[in-house]
Length: 381
Image (cartoon, rainbow, N blue to C red; front, top):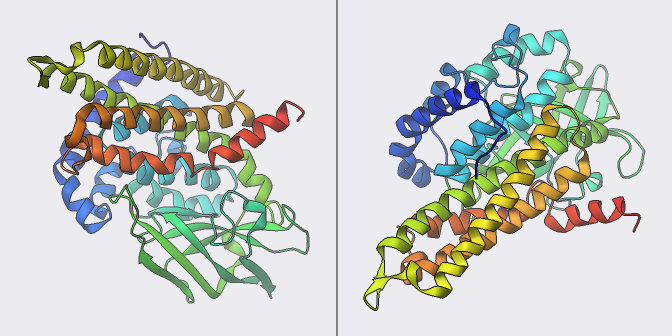
């Protein structure tokens, strides 16, 4: 199905991203899997190629295009190799970037953004806590004023890029308000006393993406590291979650489409009972169902990206795209494993790793159940 979302400039950019993926990531993927992280040298290469500052103005080292479709291309091409690469890089370049561009002072932007774009400063975002996953308003990490500084205490978990990040945007409770009230965002830097990282978490999938626990033991954070307005952190996060969720949808469906394409090729080549397995009616019909599901989901996701570019994407449509794309991704890749038979359960086959990598997409960026709750509320239920 022909997509109409992208123009010539986006496709030229896509070719450049593919070259980066084939040159810097594909040959080194196994090493990253073993080390459970992406080498900093690759981040620097991405910075040199201008891939980390797609949402950052030129005066601060970014590309300054202001066109989210370039970010979508970046996410798609990473996901076609590994959804873990898409996770690590886009947490930095697409999720953290809006906080550092839109909510910071001129001094903060000058201090952080040039190194953010070059790959010298790796970032993460600390929202999730052991006792508060999708329920961001239930966070227990606190920050209390001490002169002009803040004393930050608490912990975060499941933080992508957490083990190697130089700067983490951390949400903490700073006021007496309950639930969503009284939350503030802080930029915690790696060398701050009291900031410690736990082990790299041993995940079911996505080993290339480093994921860690973070601990804050009376970390003194200067007032110059407050991001946005004191007490409005929850609102700041809610305003930026639609972009995170449409970004997740872009990654999800690109990942599913790639694995499905490879499975179709496998079904043409793999023979059983004297003929290609794809020629059996059940398999042929199943593949027809999967292709249709992917293309319909792609069309809705593209529509949401176009709405986001136009400044019209609402939280409910972003929630629909996030949960449905994750559902389709998991159903498609599970079917691809089945079509591979026993080989689909072997880690040496990409489809097996993709199956493991995909499972978390129904959980992160707000679980699919939370997405349905948001949609249901919009229906007045």
